[in-house]
Amino acid sequence: MQIAGVEVYVNHPVLHLGATDWPPVLELGDAPAASCDTHVAVRVRPQSGLIRVRLFQDHGDPVSADPAFTTVFDGRLRLDDGRLAIGDVEGHTRFVRRLGDRGTWQVRIAVDTPGRDARAIDVTVARTGT
Image 1 (cartoon, rainbow, N blue to C red):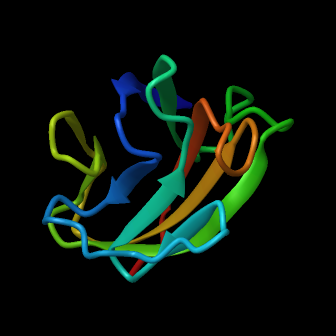
Image 2 (image 1 turned 180 degrees about the vertical axis):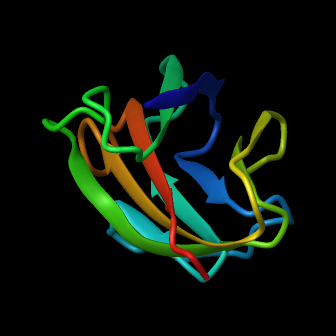
């Protein structure tokens, strides 16, 4: 089920998703995404328009992330306050959505075009129970 959506303008080719604290520096190299235990950095196309991000909570509903998108991250993130933040690396734009209890969440991030041309991101979250 889709629970949120946001469009973000970015000057730099990286969008951060994860905990609400300030993200650490994550080295992408040539990869479409890089992560740590609290954040994921996703490479996107900067300065060409808005980056669309849709957030889904996995309840087994038929409305879900676009199956044509390519998964660039599928793992667990620790969200100490139960909220997921989405924002540009400069800190100009930030969207925060409360998901539920604090703890570890299973997160799948998929993009329309992996790498430097990504313009749309679908994020699916599910509670892990821990």
